[in-house]
Length: 79
Image (cartoon, rainbow, N blue to C red; front, top):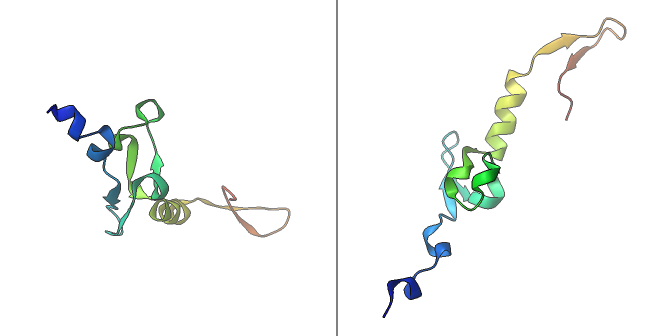
């Protein structure tokens, strides 16, 4: 019996990952950004911070700018 018959690549790839920021266990393909497109099937191609935590981090760190025409502070980028 051959070892390659018992295991496939799908068994070796991690399906879930723990977010480094929030510490919750989430689905790798749905909840993490793909950061290295040329290494697509590998789990190392995905970030270690989930999408929700990444959006929160970017929102907190955005630069506030003042629009002199409207007198309102604008937040860039506007998602």
